[in-house]
Image (cartoon, rainbow, N blue to C red):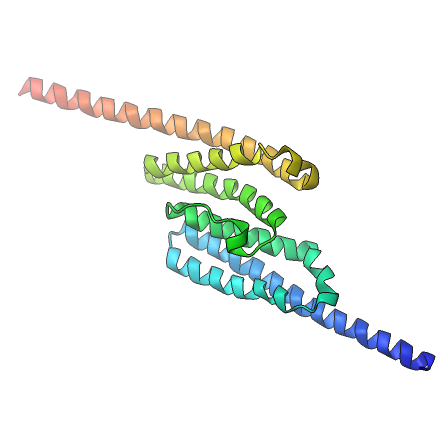
Length: 212
């Protein structure tokens, strides 16, 4: 084979590689965007539409299985991991708002590392849900969201060995700890305020009855 033919073959392989990478990255960016939209819909309690969005994101993420083995190096790129993390965060957040059990990486068809990092990010969304519930006066949902935040953190913090392998997990858990501490204070204040209001109402009713 002539050198020209050899170089032409290499050039074609590189061109094909770039085309596959561009197509894959476009799909991953779209999946990330759709997952973010799904999280927004969950906060609005539009659960059915959020589920539909995540089904679309899942189809895009499944494109990875179509990538030829020779190009699987793209699977380990940052943009792909980000897409998986956002998807995991959205799926778990949706499940928790519907009082469902946790879904594992095997069921979600995602890498374990992406699962851990996406799970850690759920804490932030649960804080937002907690604050929204407080504003609406729904103490039960606020307390339930806080309990899920603490559950996620307490379970992840026990994964000492994983933190050495996934360095970003420690950073996310440090952030989660601060978020939980702040949320715990917000919930405690609201519970005391709610309790005080009920006590005042009870006292006012007693005084009215006494006057009668």
